[in-house]
Length: 385
Image 1 (cartoon, rainbow, N blue to C red):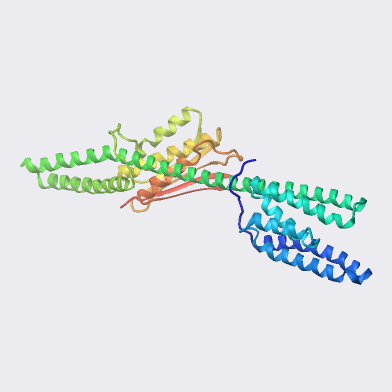
Image 2: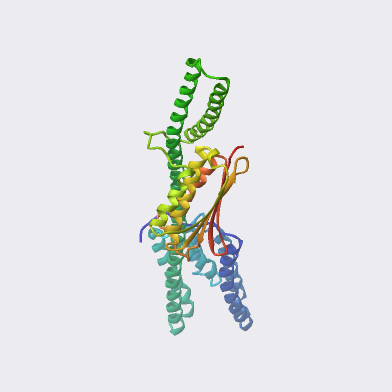
């Protein structure tokens, strides 16, 4: 064993009371024996009172055993050479010293404890009673040493488990934060294409108004309405991008155009072709008026829900419900039979973390729970009139 710094956790009232009870019970036991001896021989009253007094001194000293561990253990041990009632406090102080597992302190105190045991047993003379007392005391001393080392091992194990739990919690928080950052970067990445598209469209429409002199009033009004609508959508997209950038998202090289809700039917066909059973209830009204930004998020939510179903409930039937209209918002509800206690693999639930971050950033809400044996993912996205 090593000579590490002691691990002494704080004691509550129950722990303090237990240690004093372990010290007082031997004192009471030896006190009864001394009382019986005094009753048979009144001349032994004075030595008995001295014995009890030294035991009380040991009980008072025991209170300081954590601040002065080896000093208190040594002092109470020396008292046992002259007082049997000091045995209880000495044993408690000795066990407390053993739990520190500092052998340079423990070995000398243990040797002194055994010598004091021999001195105390010599009161019986050199006969069988003294021999039995030494053997019994040696066995008790060894048992106390083993018990103290066992307590130290339990404490080290508890500390290791707490540290492992804290490390696991920190790691999970870091993984969640990385998932959020990755999702923000992905959203900002997607926004890049749409912003470039809308701004170039605005430039083209405005240029047409500036150079075309042959447009009728109705044509001019339609172009102006198109500019107004695209400007409004551009502001919404820009707000999302800035939110991602403030949170640490990074814009990267543009990718291919991102899918929207118009592509969700193709997604269902694709997963069906791969063998996944999907039932769809699509009641979305005025689908052509759905903003591209909301459609992209809706597509990603449905995509992730189908992926989770394939991962955690393979072969089960998935139900997807889509509904909404301008002014009422868009609702997506996907359910599948809940997995039968199979734990998620590495990175489990990080997809849901990403969806929650994506939904929160556009002002929507998302929830997931197990209801009636089915895992249900319910998302609501804003859809302005």
